[in-house]
Image (tube, rainbow, N blue to C red; front, side, top):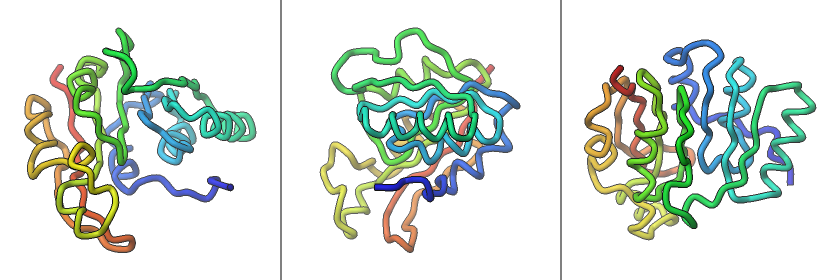
Length: 176
C-alpha cells in the first residue's frame, strides 16, 4: 500500500510559519508520516513516533530517498507511564490521536516557547461514524481547556467536509 501521496493536515501547513527554522519536532502517533515528512521537507528535524514498525519502515525509506532529517522512534504511547521521558521538543504535532493520560506529558515535553499543533475528533464526530468511542473523542472545548495555560495561535472546533468529520484544532505556544 502506497502512502507517498498523502498530503499533510491543513493545520500543520497553517502552523509552519509559527515554527522557528530547523526546529526539533515530534510527530506523535505519526502513522505513515504525512505531517512529519512535510515538516522535514521544510528543514525541521523530525522525530517520528509510532508503534507500527511497518509505518516507520516506510518513513525511513522516504527519509533516505529524499535525504531528509528524521529520527524513527518505535513507541507504544499507551503501554508505559511517561513514554516521552525527559525529551524536549520545539514543536509537537498530534493528528487524529487521543490518549488523555498523555496530555500533561505533551506540555512537559515542549520547550518554553514551543508550539503544539493538535487536531483530533470531537463527540460530534459520532454523526459521521468512526471513531465513536468516547475514549477517542474530545468533549466540547476540552482541548482548549487542557491547554489553557498556553497562548493560543489558532483554535476551532467544528464540522469539516470532504471527508465529513468533526474535530477540534489547536495551534498554541508554550509560555517562555
